[in-house]
Image 1 (cartoon, rainbow, N blue to C red):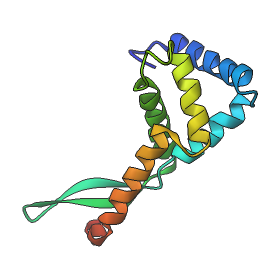
Image 2: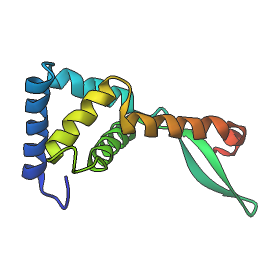
Image 3: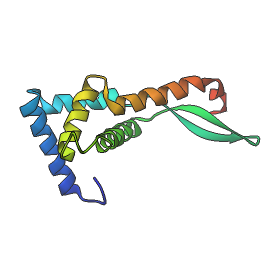
Length: 129
């Protein structure tokens, strides 16, 4: 959804679901939930200033924020796909959902990068209070 245009966003999602059903012959709701599950982060890093230094401290992500981040990453990944190859946002979203459901795609990559950063900075976990 961009600039509060919910009906346009809803239409694009339904068009993407239709493309998943017609092109890939799969259940779009099942694909959507699997893509969301694969893109949900468990940990994230937040900046914490301690004694003049800034540390990246890993924090667990709460349930609502997990879903929010996953959806945000799926939309951003779909938007970043090239227009030459995919001619509509619905097409981009459909492909991103399929790839994320298979454990690939940019949204799943983003989750892996966030987890990698959290793992690398777990030495600073004691700054979490």
